[in-house]
Amino acid sequence: MARSAAGTMVDKADDMRAPRIVAVWVVALAGAAVACGAEGSTLGSGASEDASPSGAPGAGGGSGALLPGGGAAGSPLPPEREIEQRYQAPVASKRFVWVANPTSGRVAFVDAATAEVSLVEAGNSPTTVAALPGADDAAIVLNALSKDATVMRVGAEGIATRRVAVPSGGNAWAVSPSGARAIAWTNAKLLEHADPLDGYQDVTVVDLSQGAEKSVTLSVGYRPTRVAFGADAARAFVVSQDGVSVIDLSGEPRVASNVRLTDPGKSLDADDVVVSPDGARAIARRPGEKGVAVVDLASGALAVVSLASAPTDVELSSDGTTALVVLRETGEVAWVPLPGAIGDPNLVVKKKIADTGQTIGSVVVARTGARAFLYSSAVPEARMSVITPGDPAQAPMHLLLRAPVGGVFSSDDGASALVLHDKPPTPMSGAPATSYVAAFSLALTTTGAPPKVQGLDAKPVAAVISPGGDRALVATGAGTSGPFRAYLARLPSLSIETFELPSAPISAGLVPAAGKAFIAEQHPEGRLSLIDLEGGAIKTITGFELAAKVVYGGAK
Image 1 (cartoon, rainbow, N blue to C red):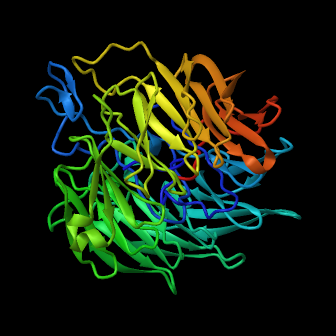
Image 2 (spheres, rainbow, N blue to C red):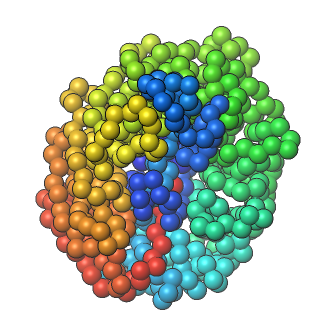
Image 3 (cartoon, helix red, strand yellow):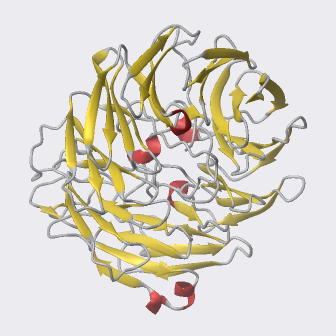
């Protein structure tokens, strides 16, 4: 399932963190992410581009005209590619940008407002960093070789650090909305050579009480891919191939239950699972099954809401009371009220959404739930539809985007969206040839203005939209191939300013409290470019003791 807003997980409704930093990062439009980090507060999930399409194993092909519900006539479509998940936020707290250096054992923190750079000692090989909400600018970094973490807090008297054991290690963080706890875990999908016999089932829960930091290591389900906190932070949820492990945080952390979402002996692609914001239930899209499975996380009771065809994506409304289920085969969306539809399937409302010849397969819901975006990345589809999650009767808005859709990032209210474009995932006979290497569009859903398309001469490395939807940032170029550029967009005016970068970008983000955007770049001694969000002036800092092996983490 797709990621909402800027791609946070528990997402999807994450941001009770204060202040909210919205940013995304990837090494290539369809490539694997190198880093990961803090997750949000309430719950959600995203679909994996590795997941098998419902009822359609393998990529599409063959000959004949493209069909809305399938590939070339008689051929199945490939799965939807949810590239939003591949984008990871660099770590920016209220005012600082945090970068770890595994070689030196230090972390650089850059004041985005003044461009002042400071260094702090961490542990042995600091890698994945996550920002911590709270009164102070703070972050936590995993030290890979010393199997611990360093908590770093910047206050009026400077920076203070504390070390805490993390026996499980990991490459990802989940942080509670209040910043009281963090969970270190390993996402095997981010490992280049994951041990095929390792389930990566150990997670470490860190109590972040200032001056009394401590940790507990627990065993959860096989190969976790999602870790999130409930809205009340009294429970955390680990989604894995076995189902959902519920961690009770009301006292000493413990695994209260392991709830299966599949039949015994079967595995689940954990990317097909969404947990409701209140932690009451989980909803799963199971490959090949015509419907969605709904499980009560307290009792473990599982029920199936049957539908006419196999879903290709499922997402929850912001309050968790309605599941939006995309039925690509018929071009429909099903509104599934929860828990009512479990006992009465007649409560399900299905509506034809796709315009003539259009394919929809993925959905992104804005954080407030005001709007949802429907598109497909399985075919070279250059259209997107916008619906109102709370009102099935509301007519959809159809937007012509001029280029194949790769991923969609929404502002909090869904009034604006940043859309990335790239070539289709697989050549499909009958599809129109396209010369697009890459592009992005800015879409407004309240004014009726045509989306603005910006062509790019290199693929995006980073993309970000602000929570309020008034700024968007895209950085392009990777490795030794240029040109290296940053594009700063202002909305709703749809004006775009282009900046030349001195070297290849690695990541990008926004620091609203400092009024800056930042682009981290490749350089043996570290390089960071800061762009003023109002005036547009750019300043580049070079040489602050960062190595090429820097790992960036942030909101997932």
